Length: 439
Image 1 (spheres, rainbow, N blue to C red):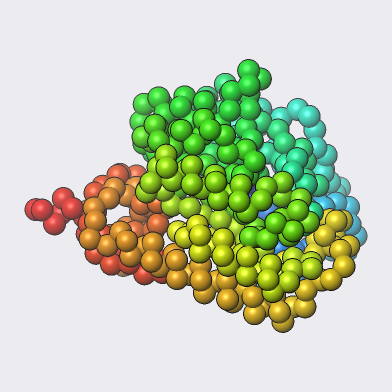
Image 2: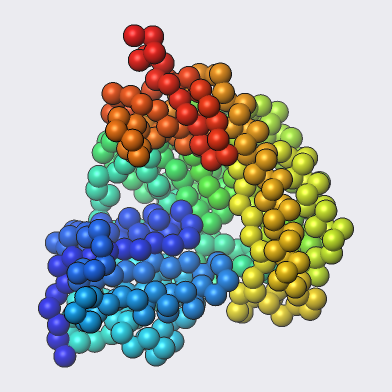
């Protein structure tokens, strides 16, 4: 049975920054085909659930969301499930949720318009292939980049941490070619982006055919006229090269911020996770990075309650947090992901104990983040204005250290202005526009 071609769409992205980027690219594909983005799923023709498979019960949450996608008259929009849950579940999704019309994995979303057309003809579009041919060549040019724009340079992961599904849902590590990355970066800057955030599951594993690493790419992007800021995420300690560390000291556009997950402070747990680094080797990297850029903000990821984690091993995690003194961090309870080695391990930690440990860890991390924010009070810094604030005349910008800064100003979104930091909270700063104050 055929159905009317969808004219409007909504994309709901969950999870990491890579998913946000993928959502933006899918929106560009649909807009290039003449569809219009809608703000609400109430009367929209197509809803794309761009899913994440990292957290516990990710698939069940997707099925729950599918069940809620009904219009006021009881009918449903066309439904597409994209992203990592789509890759992991595949054809099981429409078997469990017959209202789903399209299933498309993260390496195949460039085919979304074709799959929408197939669903419109009464079929069901499913594509979870991981083709060797890069999808990026099939994507249309980016439209309307914001002041800060994501730019994927690397996808996939070869590390096979025992708790992680990414190698199975995103595939092996693949680096985009040098010319393709630089050309897209130039187009984004020409379109108005002032900052580029280089993305990858292991972004610092990026290599081109000539053996050049991420540091060489950053130095090339630094020469683009109009580009003011460069960031990159997420990194793996094993790929933190000396050249990349030197770039933090020598490249002015590279912001003083590094997200470098450690996951645990216990060497036994790290080995069981297959992290391929130790707490000591991680701390040596942090020491070298801080020697190169003393004001750098360090961010990290932590998992508590990994199978077999003892109280002493959890204390080792607290010790590494104290040693590093993080500016920001993300912390989670371990959750078994189907198909991963850790899910089969013995000595799974009780949920109540994980809750207790997570609260203890987050209290320490939150205190460190607030202390780092307070260090900025009384100083002057430049912020990139990115979006309107909640109050009239207020704009929210980002500091070099990735803090949100609220400021009342007549300046426009996309400008970089100097602000005096007047106050700090746990999650943001308040600033006064230096030029306005001087006037």
